[in-house]
Image 1: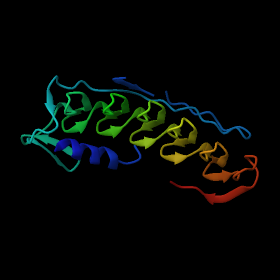
Image 2: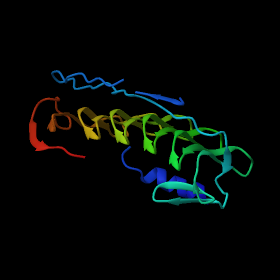
Image 3: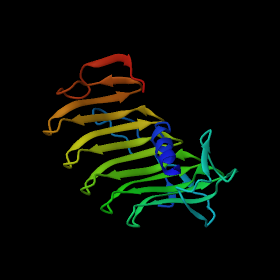
Length: 213
């Protein structure tokens, strides 16, 4: 079933609105703040043919990260339905590569996630929700890499992780919380170096080691 293959493919792609727009600008870290706004690069999603095929169609198969249908690179929309007819998944491909907005839903109709792909790469603003409707994550991608602010929440709505990235590397303010709301980690990455320790004021106790991800 192509939907299962799609799930596995999307889940395994590198740590990567029909219009994805993202503006590129960086603000130099100052003092202990270290917050970096989400870098933005404008990229347009290309038009996809108005063809829709259910993901269970036996004509689908993936080969080397490319989706084929009846032996040809697929261009069109793919969807999956729950037994009751409600939407479970929808996405689009152009020449066998993901192109546009991909969405998944819980059985109760709540949106699981909304992601953007351009030329097969994660791009722009991605967001997800818990089944109870609370926000689960917000990511920003540029060419399949985290680029900008990353936010994750627990199912209770409690913040779990607020990080900042530039081209896949941590840069700026990085914070994590325990489930009781207390700080678990609180530091700044500046030019590959980490400043700060759990429970201490950021910018004290610099580390000389380069943090890579």
